[in-house]
Length: 106
Image 1 (tube, rainbow, N blue to C red):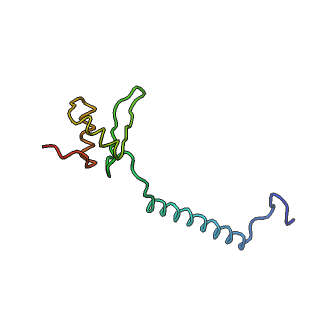
Image 2 (image 1 turned 120 degrees about the vertical axis):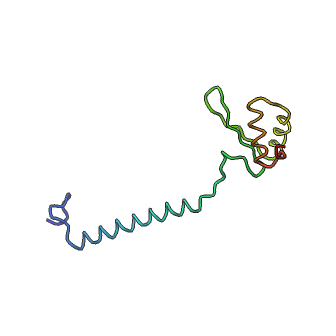
Image 3 (image 1 turned 90 degrees about the vertical axis):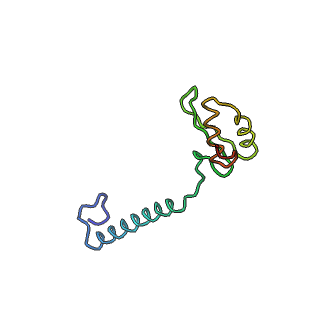
């Protein structure tokens, strides 16, 4: 009865061993892939202010919103809010200091 679908006989020892080895290889490849992704994933973190980029989380009409600016835009944004004292401007000033655009607070 060989070749029937579904098989009517239990797997032989050789077939079980082959299936076990194949499953182990697939599991090892998955583990190695996940480990490599975790170790080598160097995407930028857009939730932090750093390297000349300013990121501020604030309340918006649809919930929390993220505002982000880099380079000349970030410098202009920091310069604009540096004299203001409202809650969002104070957050922006803190993030501008963290990004190294504004000098540290006295």
